[in-house]
Amino acid sequence: MKTYNTLSFLILFFSIWLISCGDNNNNSSNIDYCKNNPCAKSLIPHKTVCNPIPNDFECICENGYTEENGTCKKIEITPCSPNPCSEENKTVCTVIGTQISDFTCSCDENYYENNGNCLKEPSCQENSCTETHKTVCNIENHKIKCSCDANYQENDQGVCEESHDIKIRIMAANITSGRKQSYKPNGVRIFQAIKPDIVLIQEFNYLDEYDDNLPIRELIDKAFGTEFNYFRGSGRIPNGIISRFPIVEHGNWDDTSVPDRAITWAKIKLPNNKFLWAISVHLSTKNHLAGARSSITAITNKHIPSEDYIIYGGDFNTKSRTEGTLNELGSIFNTSAPWPKGYNDFSDHYTCYKCYKNYSSAENCGNKFNCDTSATSYERDDPYDWILADKNNLNSLQIPTVYCNDSNNSTDCLTFDSGLVFDSRDYTQEELDKYFYPVKVGDCSREPLEIPEGENIDDYMNFQHMTVVKDFLIPN
Image (cartoon, rainbow, N blue to C red; front, top):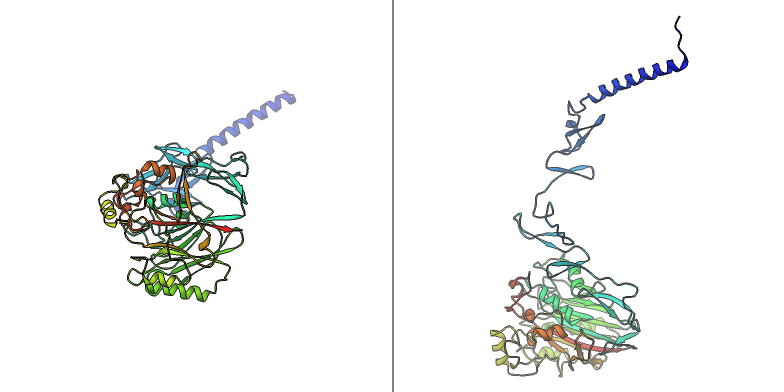
């Protein structure tokens, strides 16, 4: 009888096991799990395609659909889907029309465009601002800007000096344009150049819509900065208040002479814990006296504390400085000269109007035209726009408005003793670049000779007003 030792037996057993496993594997691989399409009865719409995988299957989306969060979503073919923007740091696609080619590519977040290239925005680092008492870092116009520390104030030479007073720049602005009188890139550039702390704004709309859901925050961030606060009043073309400082209370007062806006006000807390009441108005073209009377009544009924400051301004639609409207407002505010003025001080309205009617800038008029530069209408012959300070507290605190050449922190400055009426057409582009960057010569023109790339000439139509600026030094 044949016998087997233990080792031989184990070898025989292992060989049989390998053959058996091989047979099983071969049988499993031959199973067609998708033969009867088990995905056809899928509870998820459009997830009916069976896809075989090793020893199993999976259900996937039909053609024209993509899986998203467990569901099958239809793939939309639009100008921006799939994204055609693949240039480095320039992958933000924006649809601008209905055709497949109607799109633009713009820079990614934290990048900005310069001569067609997307450059990274600078960022504030620990050692970005190290000058004595000037260590506050901000980003302005894609550059690092160092500002004074708390309780310090920058003088005209750019040096931060200890200060117990607060300089406040106030701006009245009805500088909308375009077909629907809203704020366009030219208006944004003017805001950036003026650098106000508080704005009494009219026709407070952005883009080409009259809508309570407009992206106003986007406008504020672009034109002033993310630290600014605002209150947008009621109506189709509302007034508003924009402030670097906290707005602690706000509201609207009725002006029955106009149906599409109200008198808008805000109580602002200044850094020295004092309060300033800002009132923004756009009085009726035909009956601005009624709006002035409504304002005086509302201010009186509000019982503003006697120690608080009041600023009142905007578009009065006045044709002269001796109208009853100014007499009415004179019960609380100073309405007398000197008034803010522009770059040149002339008084021949006809020559001024003729020049601005036929040319787009002072440079084209030879920079020697005659104008009443305190007037704020488009033709510079009517005093439409005003900033009035209360006679009891604020008016005596006005100081000259100064703009310096920021490129070299020099003493090369423009000084406007009684405040500024700003009109880009008063300057050459070289002067604007020095004192009012990034404004362009044609920003206050309805038909500029040149417009920046990407802008539309229609955005400049209906420009009607020049902005008014006054500076005040508030004692601490």
